[in-house]
Image (cartoon, rainbow, N blue to C red):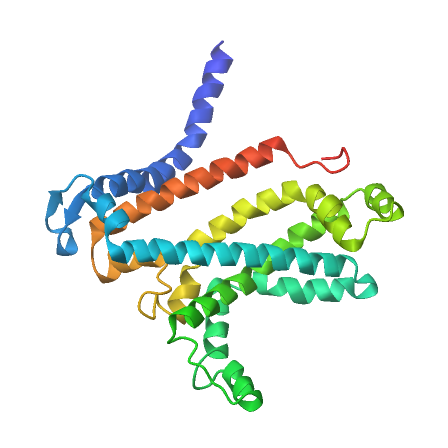
Length: 296
């Protein structure tokens, strides 16, 4: 009994540093952010005025914030579908590449090792109206040099392209692992039954890859919503005309440029809720396990 009690206190003592760090740097800021989301805070936080749910009401009903939500949805949809679709296509090509498989895998995965800031700088120079190599090629072949970063649709396309290029290697890695674990007897049986390439892809390959696709869908959603701040900041800074103003960048701008602390706190709470929901879904997927041919 004495030994159990002493071990329990020893365990709590060993956990104390971690608990203190979590309380000071995680739980306290979360509670403070939740409190500030119900206040309007003046410059430098000198005065706080309770405003109830008005910050959340403005987020959902002000035209500027509604445009921000729409831009975030558009960006998230094209980034997730493009990154996952291209990742699956490239993974299948690498899987069937034979002797050059390792070389292709190296070239396709290395963008994932770069930081988002480097990806943003690369695309900024590629699509620059003055020195960009993309415009130089278009001008030489078609005599056209569009101002990619000054037109809303083109600017959104450049930001989406940078986000896809940065993250597609991650999807390639996981899809390659899933393809390597597929039961070859099922695929061979479909081939011997006369199923064409399209039928084998839609009726056999995609269902077998469904658990991995669901897992990657959650991970890619989290990336598109929360991890693209450097890409937007370096390429467009939310412009032109707020066309690429995503939620994560709007939060930064309200909090640190416009000093609208209450609005930034309300957006942080919404993002925190989204993170908690996606994390819950992600762990539920892990809990169900991923099985191929009876193996985990």
